[in-house]
Length: 392
Ligand SMILES: *Cc1c(COP(=O)(O)O)cnc(C)c1O
Image: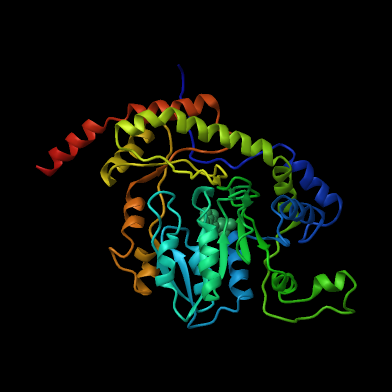
């Protein structure tokens, strides 16, 4: 058969027009922020999702930091965040002095458990940060209702969920603010990048200023003020138009990219279902009222040992699979905020047993076939035997 090539876990999407557009950005002599491509990307996000305003940012992390600034998060404030998620959803608020309160996830979608929110909310709670894990929507009608009852903001970390929807409404339109990521690992990518989506009009003007070093430069360029100056807190959150050019190439072909991901996801689901059922392996759950974004495909192994053995087995077949997240409440930082083992048992169990299979728009049918075959060849019995032997 010859050499078997290595199948990576992820490869950044590549349409082919990225370089042309980057060249156009240089030819237009506008490669700093807020050039023509930035505006074109923002228009796609605004029109496709129906958000009041979209601002491209240098990352999702930066968009979350902007959200914390816009909410005037102060020392003493609390934010509620799922423990099973990426660090930025908590850190962006901790940077402003907030204390994170870690919430447990639902065992089915692995999203924040909305039933626990009422008990976690205190007089100091300022915001609930929700993460649509894998691009499957959190229970947003319930979450928005609880947040409104307590006068608390909802921020959607929608890094996984671009173009997914909940009860027919796009993810990223439920919170007063939402954030996107265009990091290499996401469905659409310019290497490092993100966006802040604004659904509440009151944040638009200030967000524009905060994104541009706390200045009113955008207003100056529009002729609304006669000089530009420092007017508020801010930082350099706006990305180069070079990055926006690469991103535009992909956002323009969003249906093509999403179709490829849908096909790959559906094939994993179809071809692994019977095998998974036989071996008590969990596959993703997508409620009927959620249209997912096909961001990732995971399996939940019966225990940590079998997960470790499966990753090693796939590695022997030249396939890279990965796990995540270390629950935030068990992280070094999380423990400083009082996190302890047993605090969120579902998050802990999922963290020990979840494995993600290669999933990217350019994954060929043949390579995906190799992944599926290798998974099915995994021997549960020899792993169990080895474990028993090593325990003796
Ligand atoms: C990727 C990711 C982020 C961070 O995105 P960056 O653009 O790398 O800052 C934040 N939250 C979640 C859930 C993510 O998956």
